[in-house]
Length: 250
Image (cartoon, rainbow, N blue to C red; front, side, top):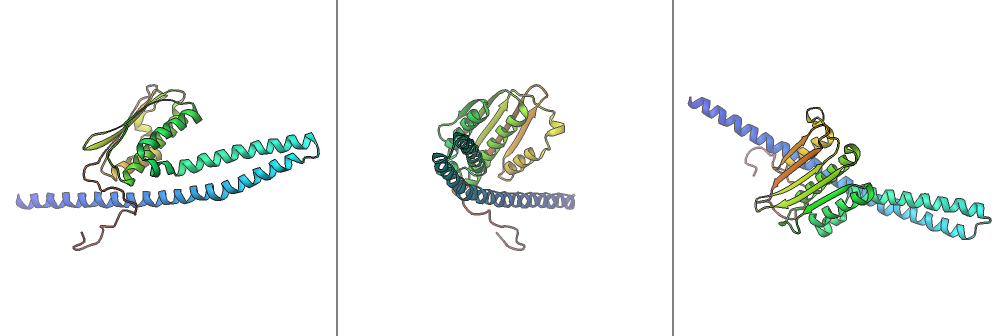
């Protein structure tokens, strides 16, 4: 009986260690992905955005000296097209990386994101976002921001015209994010393993949190995320450090 108890304890320790390794690897992968997002966003903003502005200025100058109204009209059409393209690239850059999250924090960035989806996509969003949250490290704040962003994008793509409720609150022990809609809904047994949901779930789990989704056809979708905040270190900018060494690594 003693050997059985020891064997069960060893298996439990092995599972716990495996879980920690998977969570660490997930966090490293996410960190690398976010760095790549920032790099691409920066290049879109600085290179493509800069080139487009130069083209717009050149076209507008050319419009002033157009030889005929016909030519001027075509130049004005081109200017409008370039303006739409510039806006698209600016929105794409901001979706890849939000400077507001770093500059002003999760509360301001989340409110701005909800307002952006209201304006751009016509969503009816009721946002109940705390006026302030406890100090959050960058990894946790970014995780919650990305989950909110992914939820709103999914609603735009799949839910149809509907009402949306966003809740972001905290207690001393955890922070809670809930996003619900009154849209089409879906059968979770068939769709809950979609790549978007899997990425959100693993991202939350890698930080020791819980991700729950409830949905039914014709009854909308409700997503709830809770992540512990007690005991987390604040303002980590570097990649999660390795604890995978053998022997006495700690």
